[in-house]
Length: 249
Length: 328
Image 1 (tube, rainbow over the protein chains, first blue to last red):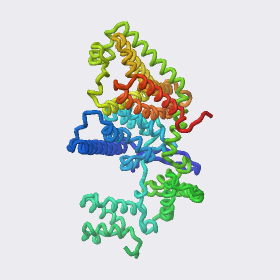
Image 2 (image 1 turned 60 degrees about the vertical axis):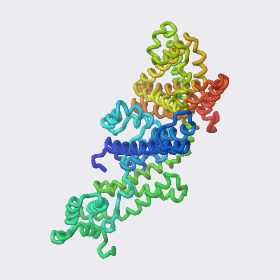
Image 3 (image 1 turned 90 degrees about the horizontal axis):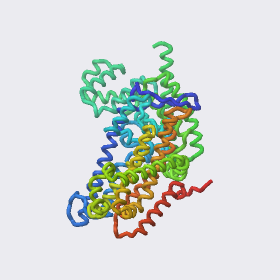
Image 4 (image 1 turned 135 degrees about the vertical axis):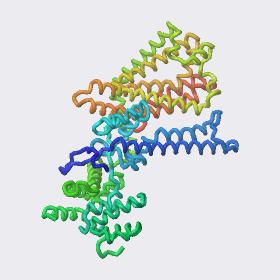
């Protein structure tokens, strides 16, 4: 999560305001591109597979050419579902997932009302109808411009529906380590170690080597101790510092 | 380490020892927000969680401002706050409430706009009829060359349509086009209502002009026969979505005391729900237009019956009667 993300503060009964970090154009675009690919692939897959199956069942040929004559079965079983998948993906999935979609989830964002609650069916509908305006003139030009210019990073659909896109930290994004909980390890370092271990397989070996050695030095290990360690041993050493002294693995 | 920083570190570690409680609170809030728990004891514990999280978050903001722990606490606190203040979310109930309560209420609220939108559409239609009746060459402004050539040869462009395009494909094209036009009529209210007025006026002009042109060639009856089955609902929906767009436009032109953004939001939210009903109705109208309207084997009486029945269905849907709503 970005440290410079703007926040929306909501008063609460406890006197401690609720703070929602607002998502900007980057997170929005990331989520949208993922969702767009999902709906295109789903619609094309349905259309292709449905047409193949239809042609095969009708006259035994494998072809993706749509039939020419009036065909209610083709209309109902192939065309309509493919169009529904493409055009109703956003409103239906947002309704089913309470303001989220697979793309938004991947980008770590979700749609909320201005008071922090989950948006209602009407708000989600209005938000999606206004995509027509936001997508003008091409490639969501108006929507992205509004997101860049408005204080709360909202597009026209969000203005109309009274919704916002906020970052949401997934429960697995916060790792507790026994050592930090017990006060043996500094909390900031413990979090960095946990994050490095989580990202370990995705990092290049050189990068994780540098990061692991820097962190282990901050945990009090000397250069003499660290020099002979290879990649696997560095990872093991990081795991060790998150454990309580004397605890069995 | 100074005394103050040692004290802060001790407090931070004391705070972290409660992390398991935060995770429990998050799980509890998730259960409630998804409607998976109605247990009063659990609800009372969630209220306790709220106070505990507020306390811990205040500490975390002071002691660990840049930590994942603080971010996580913010997230859980926001979730519990939303759950306690806004209740759970059940899709079926939300959709039912939309059709039974929100859409009928929006239609009642839109009634003055609906009257004006319909009047504009009718006047534009009459103007289009008068223009082309008096100056037939103006039809080139409203209709395609193929349509004009077909009518001049004494045939409606809809004749033999099913020989060229299958009903299924025709229906999908029509309903998709109509839904886009209807949504556009609503969304273009964003341009201070001018876009909506333009779309309504242009569609009225085109309809009137085409009727006048076909009447000059003795085909108005045939055109009426083509339109009657799907047109009653299609044109009504056009006026309804135009009314919703006009309401959005008026909110921007005359925002009142609450400000332009808030007024726009309120009008768009209130009127936008009717768009769902419009889309549902246009799907049906598209199917009728693809399968019934161009079929010469279906007699006029059947087409009229379908048109009237579908229009009555529209009234039942928009009044909430279909979903069990009764007049208060």
